[in-house]
Image (cartoon, rainbow, N blue to C red; front, side, top):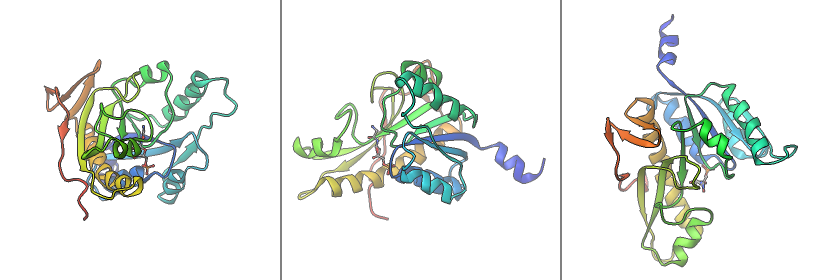
Length: 227
Ligand code: GAR
């Protein structure tokens, strides 16, 4: 085995699921690209053939595939096709990075303990959609993002880590979303790194970090700061 092959062998195989712009995908790929994250990005897979995240993946030479919902009888049937596409890349971790569809129970079960999601709020606040708008309407002073293992409960799986982000006077959905995205782009590679190095595990839904059960999510402060 050449040294470069041995190097690749130590990298955790990952498939990323996305539906949109793919800025989180890009942040993860960049961290992997400059060696900060020991993963091998095997593919980006989307429900939307036009997702810009797929364009970003192709530009980096990473396989990019769409599994559209059209042509499938229901969510369960679509998710069977989605899982077949993902499994062809043999990932050990599936990373949801702006994948905007609910999964079937069988899909979640298939990837139990090996699928992460990032959500743009400090869960359990603001599960679901339009989180920035809802935080602004509620007059929240703090907002942020959360990484959790995926379970059948929408945005309700065991939390791993959160990054709080301040809501500033005059914020709009756009300014707040941009600040949360900056935090996401640091939080997600960090958590994926913990998984890739064996520090983070989920076993039957029980999350451990460095062998200790995680009773509250790790809080990483100031990740939104401008570089
Ligand atoms: C991110 O803010 C992510 O937290 C959110 O979609 C955005 C995707 O941005 N995910 C969800 O809302 C999932 N419920 P990106 O395509 O630029 O990475």
